[in-house]
Length: 254
Ligand SMILES: C[S@@+](CC[C@H](N)C(=O)[O-])C[C@H]1O[C@@H](n2cnc3c(N)ncnc32)[C@H](O)[C@@H]1O
Image 1: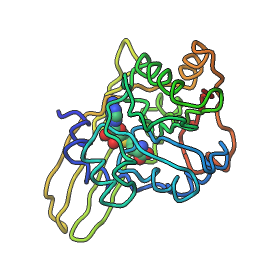
Image 2: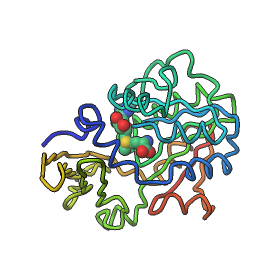
Image 3: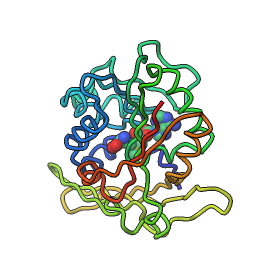
Image 4: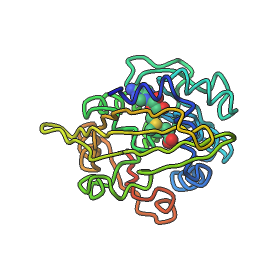
């Protein structure tokens, strides 16, 4: 079965359609208010089609995006969610970052994207973020799976079944489409993903992927923060959490 990277790099237009299922504007507004990011420099890591880039910019922050997929970048630019210079293609963690990425007050790691990094890669990324943020006033905001939900086989995940309609067709996505396979020795889970693309009512193609994700708990985030001498917290503010259902929103102060 193909890796989910194939969806992100070769079928990003499909991911773009199925991922427009959250209130990006309100999520961004709540995070800007909670973390006081008005007029601040923000980098959306693993930014995908770039909806958070647009909504952070619309709501008063200066936001750019980073993602390894050229196709995601092209889609973000053609949808006018980001301009060319504000969307960087880079595989994370990265040894060296473009020079224009500096003085960053907040880094975003939303929609469980930290799961695409092992614990040691996540540690590497955090060390990179420390270097790029202003001394003592940066924050890394991480959206994690709730561990109760993870142990329950992700059955409560609101994005398990997604259906979207567009002119001439529709897409149905199941993520995970069947029982996830848990690794014996690590926090990695292999999630089967099935995406059916319809032309009118006719099935045009059926895509199958496996998304290998590390399920990091807040305990892991807290541990990485501690070994780097940093403070961390879980956001308990309902007005923020209402826009991140079934997730844990954590922050590391850089
Ligand atoms: C789940 S999507 C997140 C989309 C977006 N952040 C959101 O909230 O909707 C994950 C994104 O991470 C990107 N990605 C996966 N592994 C990556 C890596 N090692 N470095 C940079 N980007 C990566 C993929 O191309 C994809 O766009």
